[in-house]
Length: 207
Image (cartoon, rainbow, N blue to C red):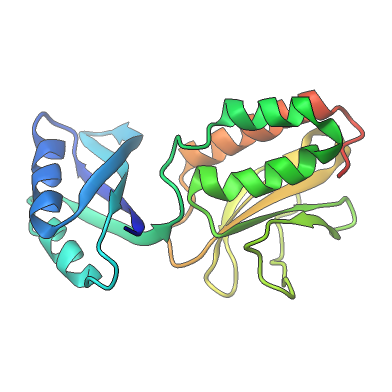
């Protein structure tokens, strides 16, 4: 069955997630995983991955969720794998085992880990070093913020996260279509993964 990721804002109190789980089950969705992105001011932001019947209306799912008191739906988008199926540690291990292919391993893994549509590593000149197999061809790149790690939205509405890769001056770019912006928790995790990959690959990162 296809997988969906749902980003919800809900009251941070006992029973709230249970009510959401029962509502999802009644609508025909099976929960695969729940990731808590944020807890603040009595509210929580959760990403819930569910299996959902092919062709079933998403309106049914969203209507059921918003009927729960205090629940807001930030977005629903399709994902290829559940979070945690392909772990950060596993990626770093693959890079360490085969450094010459390290950038390829990193770029191909990132969309799976973060529920993205595609990723690319850009050289210091902005040229694509490697793009994941899901990337559009030809690939049109957004205007990337000048410095630092950023979550931003392109002119075409695509959500992006960009992270500099250490002293190599490369940029890891992750894209997600028809989804909410990357949360700061996701951006921090992407930074950590890129930093770990850089530590394994060293300054001279290359495909």
